[in-house]
Amino acid sequence: MGEIIGAYLMPHPPVIIPEVGKGREKEISDTIVAMNHISRDIAEKKPDIIILISPHGALFRDAVAITGISELEGSLKEFGAKQVKIEKKNDLELAKEIELAAWEEGIPTVFLDSDKIKEYKVSTKLDHGATVPLYFIEKAYPGYQLVHINYGLLSKIELYTFGGIMASCVEKTHKKAVIIASGDLSHKLTPDAPAGYNKKGAIFDKKLLGLLEKGDIPGIFSIEDALVNEAGECGLRSIEMMLGAFEGKDISITILSYEGPFGVGYGTAVIEPERKNSERIFKDKITDIINEKINKFRDNESEHVKLARSALENYISTGKIIEIPSDIGSELNNKKAGVFVSLKKDGELRGCIGTIQPVENSIAEEIIRNAIQAGTQDPRFYPVEESELDKLIYSVDILGEPELVENKSMLNVKTYGVIVESGSRKGLLLPNLEGVDTVDEQVDIALKKASIRRNEAYKIYRFKVDRYK
Image 1 (cartoon, helix red, strand yellow):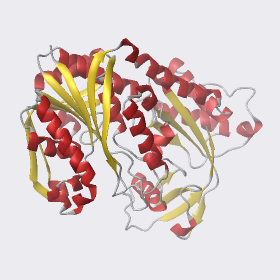
Image 2 (spheres, helix red, strand yellow):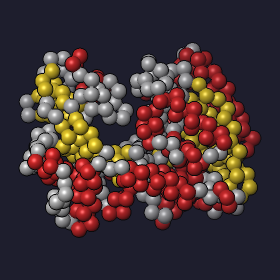
Image 3 (tube, rainbow, N blue to C red):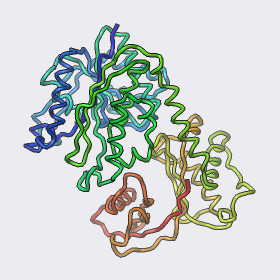
Image 4 (spheres, helix red, strand yellow):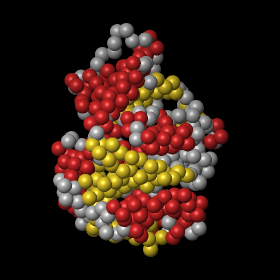
């Protein structure tokens, strides 16, 4: 019988590779020492397979991507080091077994064989999330086949369950495997960080690594979504999926290093499985944690959000548009305004539709219209299904009148939303959005939404909103 004999948290900064860093890698020497330690540990274990989970490459909102071609290769060409190459055999038998088992459990996957690569127009080159960790492993132990997985923006419980599926599929083989959870922590540790500065970044990193070191899996799944989003990380889902492979087992976790000299948190850890332990079956508890978070939101909903939720739930369930409730507040019934309704699922955007100027006879009707469209007409997402309704968190933004501004100095990313306009093209971005920290970012996103190039002439308007949750 096969088994997962270990797992590792490994970051993936290309600068850590000498051919890329050209001396700067010396600034993250603790991480280099830890990466070499992990490589030697893997060499001692001599696994037949390395399952590597990456946040980059072919990333889907609604599915886990499993690379399904026989030869896997990648380089650091885009980072100026095309001579750094990785070439590995894919364990296609295990990859396909995982894909089939996931579908049987109701977890959507995309098996990226040659047909799917053409269909989705994606690359199966090993991304830097894979290439950087494998660079170190290859030096110590090249004798393995690879299974390459991109985690997808699925729910936490789906990711955790997928980890368990990986383990059960390995057990059906006669092979030994280790898991690499590739991921960096906060990208917002310092003012010169690539994603801007947020004081919550360091708080998130400390909290996550502290819980990981204790083996507190429910605690990791209890981390607040707002903290995760403000930290701007890319490794949490890799960790959540990896931990699922040890459902029902004792594990020993050692944090080897943590540092963030470039404004990004780099953590390394070794996870050793031990004996089976029925008290460490956490799947139901994680589900309860997620439901508790949602119920807390529902208990404190404004009447704006209650109306939006009722509108979408009724429409998805019956196909009918609700009437305005008789007890709705007079402001909602008697005033007009532009309205945006946003839906989130598991901390990720699931739909957002709005109107800059009112098109209905009241704010209440505007909310009903836009809630239904956010769930069924946002072109970035497939329509919300009835099974998802209990997992959605809503917010409603009531827009103030737009005001023409002379320059960006009149903007404030937390206070004002922006509208950019060039001819008939318009793009809007709401204020105070997670992950949007500067005026330049805000305007650039609005320009992209409107398909307006930066060097074109355009007008900027600002507006305030009343946000309801």
